[in-house]
Length: 367
Picture 1: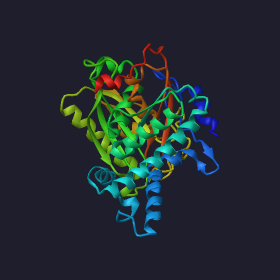
Picture 2: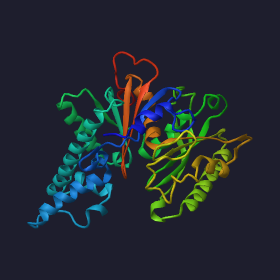
Picture 3: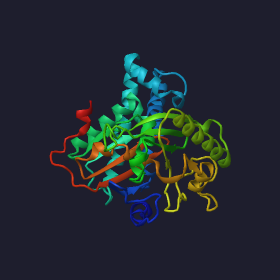
Picture 4: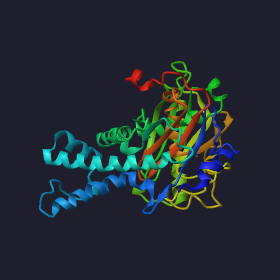
């Protein structure tokens, strides 16, 4: 069953961080941890789960000397898997497709389990993001899972997130910003913290093209793969501060009017005061300590932007990725996001405005 904390306490959050009540949407749940006899259900639909599917197939084939692939399964990159699908021998492509099928079945199973929860029972569309979605293998797995759910008789759309996964976690921060920012500034600072990477970027709001922020984009960003260096928490925070200052200085030199606002996406359950309740175990060091507050640390690193004191708002990273899809979800009332990466991030939403009739997916008009 899911922990009650993520599904109910969020609705009572009164602080600016991890809030359920956002300007255009209500976050009905996030960071849900659904369990079965094997452990966390979400683990069945992580990037690691796909590797396990492929490795299990290879193990069977190796017994007869029929494995067409070489090397360790975990070391085969997404690009290499995509190349096997497109240019590989028939046996290689078929093997990858078999793993895609197994993973798609697992993803459909996970979605069925989430659909039993009160906060997900009315979900009409799910956007799937995370690094795995970036690959052709990931896109095929998402599409196949959608077909499986449809043949089950579930009226549920399952679509890849529109933005590049590296940008979605930054663009979504624009939907955390207070209204006054949009009157005087044309860009803001965003941070996406993950189990392997930290990305900092400047988001151009481009309201003259689309007041609903559907044309917002990442102007420039910097990625640091902290998993390769295994820093301490303090070292990671120091590096984050430098990344923030570098991005702000670069944007101001180019004439952007950068808002005194930093939106932060971080794994875990975000408390109203900016503390991380749980779920940050993949980050370097202890980010859940009662003596550590990420929001306060960022304010100390960047106390002001331009002539104004810096305002920092933090939410769960999956929530923010989902918010990047806000404009494409206005024709439904209830929707959700799953992010496939080191783990499986999740969030569900209820639009404040009444859904328009017709329910035409805006993605079709964009493409």
